[in-house]
Image (cartoon, rainbow, N blue to C red; front, side):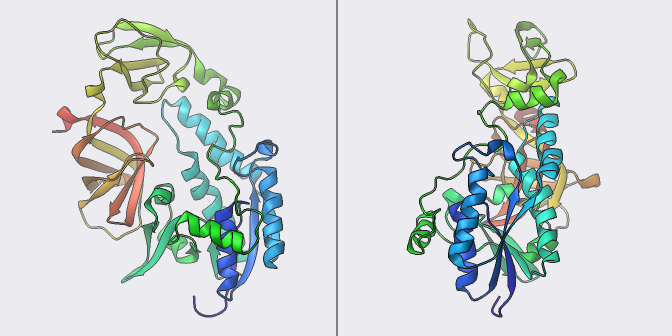
Length: 362
């Protein structure tokens, strides 16, 4: 944006969004800082995203930059659309990605709408992703520094939302972001990055599930792929596909891993590591950020920290898709996201419904 515009900046209270606000003002735009109060329960937890201290830090940064700052209460929406979904996903025997849901259902929904109501021309965030103008409109790309890339968590962004969004720090390495904050004397310059899920204050996510969905943790059997009972468990919510520790099994010829969670029968199905390999994946709720006609040759990520791998994505009816992997991927967990890439560009993605064993997929 070359002309002076009003840009709302989502200020989480961390260094990235602080510098995003600083870069907006440095470019000569009218910046308006907005902080979402999402979860008051983390108010005293150091280093947690959305903590009460973060709101105070965002306010201090806004004052230092000389921009207005507002705090919007989205706690009820967050509780309904993110925390409840987190518990429900685990209760179904799946493994959720709450940060994706937060971006999809709160930040790029409610907050984006609030930015428009404030008369903004754009909403800027501190995400490490890039928005690049392409031949047919804006494109979403991975961050300039791959170790900081957050594009996996933004796959649900729609083309219309992307048109309104800006990511000022997406091209910058983290060290430069901190250097800018230090240069400006911002209180967040040396603030540690938040790592944990903001609504899991003690790191024990099962406490959240037990409180919201107490029937989800009913005891059951641990069985092998043939249905032979090997042991018992205290609830499927304690497990995820690919997990090895915590099964309480010993004396087997080879290590056993969680292959499947059967929520209906409260069963944990285990097997050897080789059985974790998936050759194909079925997706639901697929979101496309790039025009597509038929099958797409691309790379996909099935976990946020895994490198992309070559694959073929075949769109199906009802917003579904089938992903055919060129090489097997381990521990493809229902409830996680599968995101499609063409180089650095995000083509889209969907939620994993099921993985097909490599031998069966072939």
